[in-house]
Image (tube, rainbow, N blue to C red; front, side, top):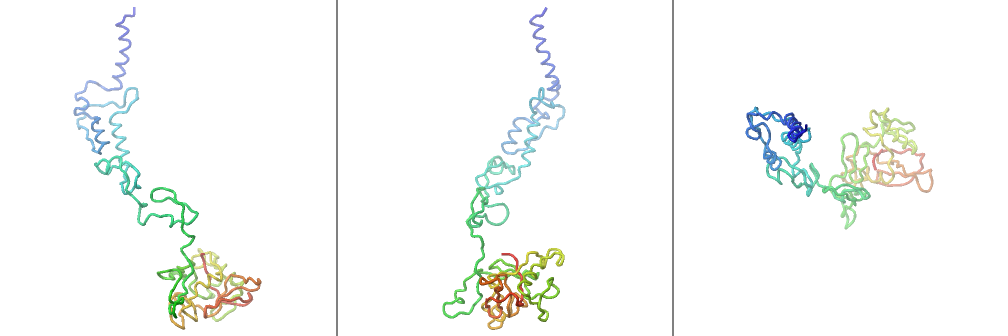
Length: 343
């Protein structure tokens, strides 16, 4: 006969057995939290609040359970251990995080400064340099600024411009007096030390030497002028094109580039130095006998451009580096060549 007493035993006995299985042996010599092996809630709070590391009692007589009843909760050790692992991975400081952005810091114990939720102070991207603004980004292009906001660029398409004539002497208020042009300051040219010259006014890269010799000549159809080579207009274009042959000039083309071409008439005219003559080229101003520095081996003669004359396809523009004259002549004539790349 089922009595109330038997009913109570039937209900409580399984619960008691479950507690025995999941909570461990209750007959312990050391009570939990009183010199035991378990982190306390107070220790966990101290760790999360200000980073204070807790140390469990070395007494190993208390054996804590491996998990909560029916595996439905985590032990205090697990809570402490998981947080400690995650916190250790947070190594950013305020200077690494953008201003107004909040992150979790773990480098010290000052809550809100070196520990816990901290607001970043960085106003520029990590590393050296300054944050880019709209004026640094080309018009029509977007970028993220230092605050993580998308900005539309407003800069012009190039920082280059019409180059200086390099005339330094002047009469009254002429070109030599104002000395206008690009670059406004600094060196006009950069000698790259590899047989090339970069024009800092236009951004173009030129072959430093003004003649094509036999060692760097992959094309035929030239007229010999001592060790110099002169080409008809069509062969001048072919000569520049063949400089890009990586088989002829391994591994990546003549002087390390494979995009050489014959310059157009404005590009070729841009390296004239009107402060020099014979040849009218270079950076230095030396009166009436230009040295051509930093360019070398420039003939005071005609150089082909790639620009065909508007009055008929039989003619093309050339530049004379004697006085800087620009004119048109027949494409069957043989002139000198100075390759260019970029633009």
